[in-house]
Amino acid sequence: METLRVILVEDEDLFRGMLADSVAKDPALEVTGAYGSSDEALSQTFSPPPDVAVLDIVLEGGMNGVDLGIALRKRYPSMGIVLLSNHRNPSFLTALDPSNAAGWSYLCKRTVRDAETVRRTIQGTAMGLVVLDSELLAALRPRVNSRISRLPPRRYELLQEIALGYTNAGIATRLGISVKTVENQINLLYRDLNIDTSDPTLQPRVQAVRLFLDETRSTDLN
Image (cartoon, rainbow, N blue to C red):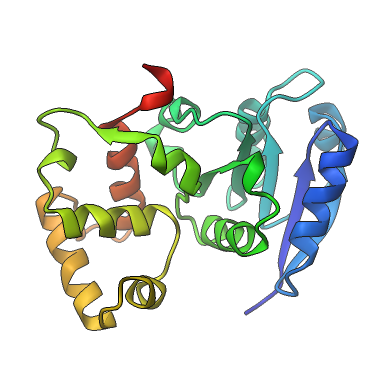
């Protein structure tokens, strides 16, 4: 796999250093810039552009992390954005324009020490997926009478695995089933959720995770 270029924007020096160390543990990832404010990040000209930007939601400067991500995507449309937060609040993602939602992910700051999760989140985001932190997933519950609430337990579990950014092979290993079974179950999941798989411009995994966010509520926000 080609090395992914990653930039970091975090205004706490100590945490920025810890984040850089966590990313650098993976030889498939390269930190090409680390900045302390949105203004500093926007003042840079990247050539080649980063594959992924990891952005703290709360930043010093003129923009928060979401606004900075939108600005960076306007300059570099293929750049993936990982939002960092101390809180399990999915509204930062659900507020995005659905047409621009691919390649936006969410990572809790407490998870940054887990290098494997950081790697999976960055790699999935670079592929245009939407990857959610396991802590965020743990706080989400299906809304009453939603399509998500009517899923069989196994397919709901499968949807969570997709939201965590696991590949079919990774899901098969984690659930102790074959890759073929995973593929068949994902197709049934898409059918249950009425997800369009015929349009090559619409990534069904992104559609599934967006629907998951739209049809769940956070227990932290009750």
